[in-house]
Image (tube, rainbow, N blue to C red; front, top):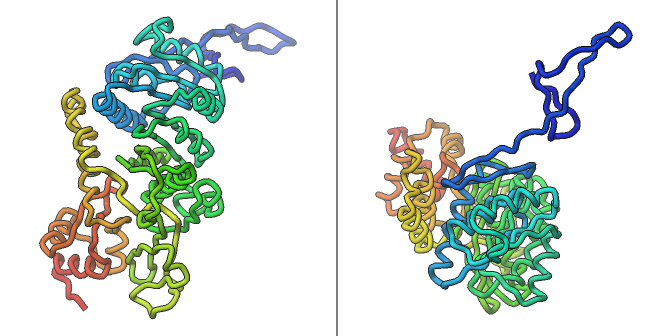
Length: 423
C-alpha cells in the first residue's frame, strides 16, 4: 500500500513509519522521502521524464517525426529544429541524436521541467557547444521572437493538447520555405462532430458526426493549417497524416510552399448520406445545391455535411517510401519482432492511391445495412480489386476499407462472397 501526500515528490510505504502515542491514539509519523528520478529508454536513448506529462504510446509519432527530420537534413544539408512544447525534451533529444539536428530550440512554458530537459539534451552535447538552447516561454511568444529576429527553422514541432490552433500562424511565420511543420490535435470530441462550434472556432470547420470521424479529425487539422497558410500567402503539402487511438492523437506533417494557390479543389465540403451510406465531396460553388443521388435532386434531409475541410491526399507515397527505407537502414524494422512501424507506413502508402476518395467503409456498418455477417476484410478487398475498384486497408480503423466502391456495390459484393441472394 502507498500513502501519497499532496506533494507528488513524496511517497510513504506502509512499513516506513513508526507509531507514537497521542491522547491514547496511535498516529503514524511519515518520514519525508524524495522520489528517485526514473529513466526510460526509447530507440536506445536513455532519458528522464521528470514531472512532465509523457506518453510511451506516442513513440510511433516521435519515430515518424525523427525520420522526416533526418530526411530533411539529408536533402538540404542543414536542420534547425524548434520544439515549441517540448515537455521533458524527449523529441528534442531524438532530433539531436538521431536526426542529426545542427540546432534545437527546446521550449516549454513550465519552468519546473528545465532541469529535466537540460539533463536529457546534455546526453548529446554540452550547452556550451551551442547545439541546443532551453527556454520557458509561451509557445507563440518564443516563435514570434525567433520570427522577429529573422531566425527561421527547417522543422517545427508543435505537439499541442486539445484543439489549440492558436500556434499555427506563428509556426508558419517562423518556418523556412520548404520547411516541415509537424502539428497535433487531441480533440476527439470536435472531430467526432460533438462540438461543431468549437471546431469552427479552432479550425474554421463546422464538423458533424460521420462514420469516419477520425479521418475527419486529420482533414480538419490540415484544413486549419491550409487556411492559416493562405492568409499569409503560402500553401502547404501534406507528407503524411497519422492517427493514434490513445488520446486520441492526430498528427500531420506538412511542407510549407511559397505562394498562394487559388484553386480550392482540395478544400471544400464532405457529405455523408445516412440513407444510402455513400459519401460525396462538394465544392464551394455547389453550396445551396447539395444533394445525394439516392434522393431527388434537392437538399437531402439524410445528408450530413461537414466543412470546409482538406479533401485532398493525406500522404505523399514517395516520401513515405523514403521514410521506410531510412527506417530499414537504421535497423528500426523488425527490431521488436512485430514490424509495427513497417506495417503502418506500408498501409499509409496504400492509402495514398490517388483513386481512393476520403473516408472509409466500416465492415460493421456494411454488414448492418446488408443484414449479413461480414466476409473477411481480405476477401472483400480482393473481390473489389477483381471488379476494378481501388481498395486498401485503413491505418485509422482496422476493420475498415478505403475504397471508391459505393456502399450499395460493396453490399452486393459481400453478398456474392457469402452466396446470399442479391435483391
